[in-house]
Length: 424
Image (cartoon, rainbow, N blue to C red):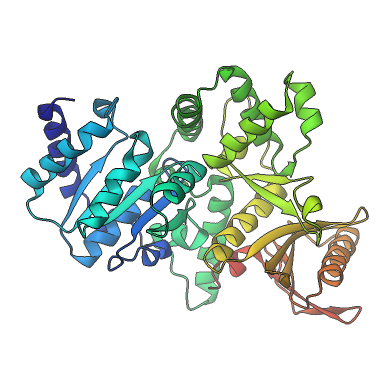
């Protein structure tokens, strides 16, 4: 690629960077995971448009350090090759002068990038990377940057992020503030946490475009998928049905897959690019944990804000999805695991484990005002707690917070989801 083209792109992106003000963006807790003093590459991965670039730029600007920047998700850089990376480095030094930090956005678009990053680390540069494919980055990091990378996973906005962005104060919980928080949660429950949707009126158009971009840019090109219509139909079906258990035999019949291997690959691609997120069944047996896998969308906006979704508000399922995503955020850096429990008679939505020790179980129900529903959810809590061996039991609802109840000798904490979400 010609030097003049690369230089122009770097200059244009530098101008965009100078217009970026941290005052225009909310603080996110994941910023603290980026260690600017480390000699390891800091790798931020997550779904396309989840805010990875903004997170990294904010972290660097808040620290007041000089850094060079390039976003490879730019049509002018299409076809950039390994041989061009030194040219990019030369343009960096010309435009940014001497720098110790380098931010490379959507780095997975460049073949051979790990070797270049490894060389930059040997030169004692601090390298920050972002990417939209979890397995690809993990695999290449393991191969080429063994022990020299720290990975940070970023999801769309949490409810706390959502409140920070919309300047809704979290404490103290006065009557007035509780009302504001409940109203904010109603919006979050329907809209979700994709950062760019905070200022977007055409939600359905945005979600359609994003889904199509992920399928065509992050899956089709990277994995050379031939049957793109089948992949698209499968994606829309899964998002329409989520959360649900994946039954491969049913999916093979519905979409005429000739090979279970192809179906497994397609499901893996959707997981790697963060359109869906898997949840294993709780069991002490490894072979049972990988069967009957459940899945969730990466954000509730994908559940119905698409063409031909034929989905209503599904408030109970949306509530369950929000709790699942928050548990994923909370357990990721503690190296803990999340499962669901099911024994044929009842189900407990989530089981959080640290190794083989169960920390807590969570049951999610939109409303428990109906006695039949209340009894069913309490039974799910108790069965989950007794089967997994924990006394930390939560029943989370849309807006019903009560005094803890004692049932069969077990204490169950009942609280609204939004109150649980703002507890650190």
